[in-house]
Length: 427
Image (cartoon, rainbow, N blue to C red; front, side, top):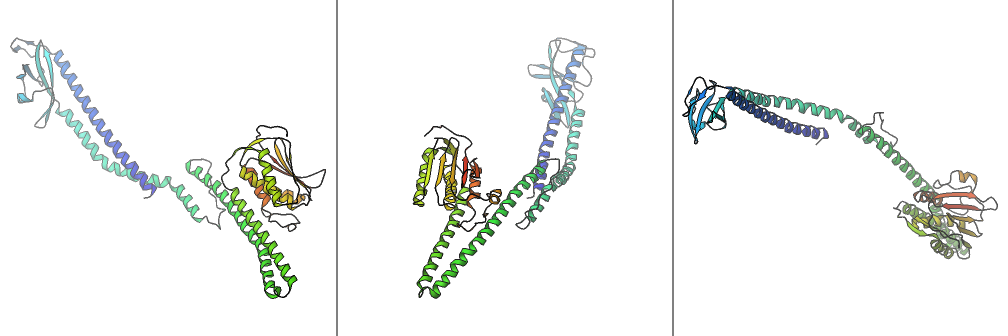
């Protein structure tokens, strides 16, 4: 069911409930008021009235108003003293009594020590009130129809901005992610919704463009190694069985290319792992770093990876994602230099230094862009994913990541600077 219909029915039902309650409350309140007013009138007129009552209920003169019904109450038996309506004595009881379409209000009073039952015909007041009630119920149906139509028209009018939002969303697709909602200056709920949708669409468009670039770049980067594999596989089929040098060269190239593709796959898996939820906890870097260094020494046997511990800080971070970050930095350092690689733990930071050629200025200017590499992009092999991944992890861990060429010597220094440090010491 459309929202406008639901709103209309909701308003209509509540209108009926409130109106019926109001009519009932008005009728009951007015009826009680009329009865109270008539009781006061009977009481006051009886108190103001003259006349003398004798022991046996006989009196001289005009003792009661002529329109009143008066009877004495002697032990529960009514003796009629004045009655122009000829009511049966059993109807003479305190309260409102209806007889042959007429309404009488009776009240028990005392006059000169004699208990009396005094009544009055109040039919005109009750009939006027009933006419008002009937009129209200006659007017209610057409008025309810007017309210129903007005509520539907108002709902349709108020929902027009939402329908415009829906139409705009219907035309947004992968080929038209640039569409946005115009937002008015008067920020009501619908305009706030448009603003939120625009923010969401900006993020979706950015993510989609990044995904497009990643797919395009991965496809481009995979084309060369796949062509290499196919070419050397074809060469093996033709001459590999008869020429040993051709076979050796082809197998060596195939192995190298397969390793490069494996590296790309691992980097893409690291990208996926970086998007997982990061659970931060206290981590002692003086205990954490040696395990990372030993693992890389085992991977690069014969290479010098020197760990210098100048402090013993404890930080709040994710050990898994910090390990990914260090793996990226160590992999780059070992890949671009044949010399020693240093890891220095200081009071508030970790430094990773190599003795390689450093990083060209044009690379430093757009560092962190995926698949972006320097002039020596194919020596050594790589994919240009690592640094962008390191940037993303550092942002999620609230870590400052600084790249700079060493001024005093050749090489690159990468500084991992933590925002909050725990206990510290000197080792």
